Image (tube, rainbow, N blue to C red; front, side, top):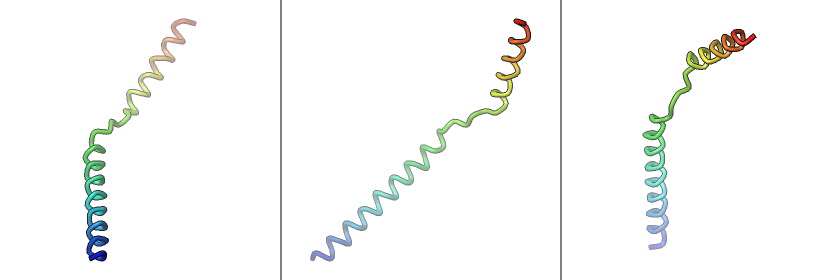
Length: 54
């Protein structure tokens, strides 16, 4: 009886872990990537503005 409860608890824990993993995988698709090109464009624009002021 106690052994069955322990096994059921372990099974429930694995089910929760799988659920958290699936949720994390789904949410990872919504992480925004930083755009390297736009960062370089900002640097160029900043340099142009500094040169223009000088």
